[in-house]
Length: 149
Image (cartoon, rainbow, N blue to C red):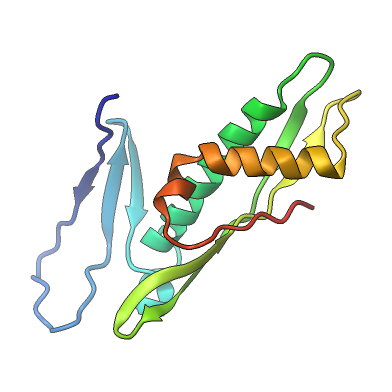
């Protein structure tokens, strides 16, 4: 397996000098073409129009779980034709003076193809399996729960 990388770039005319000042207004480049403006989360003084690390973590978890879930649901006679999610990452403190994401909850909404049916037991089993196969979920120390609508 090869390493995966991004380019992170911050360019400002003034240096970060104040103690506790969070750098804002930088960009991430993925796959040599995509540039995304990123910064600190709004609760840390960041621009709400820029992506932040907490959102990136929730997005990575959601994408990883979606890919596994869709792969597990593919079978002859039908599949899911729609998958939408609105994951939430909750920042907080588990240990004094250490910020972390204390909870990450995906909220997928599934849209089955005609003829595809999955009962509650099959859905629960599939969710358990996709969680086991998701390397992002396996990388997180806290529990990750899925609520299917």
